[in-house]
Length: 69
Image (cartoon, rainbow, N blue to C red):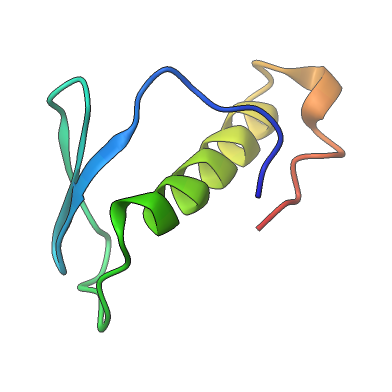
């Protein structure tokens, strides 16, 4: 599990997309073979969000610790 949570939560996950608590629906890059629970996918979402924010320089302090997936 990644350090720190973000202000949106995953409310729905399907094979082709996921929905966040703010209403955004985001397609998966590839169709999933197995659909995780929203709680399981939340961990994945938080982790990748942390990694991406560190990589684009929005949080330099987490760049080295963002390898949590």
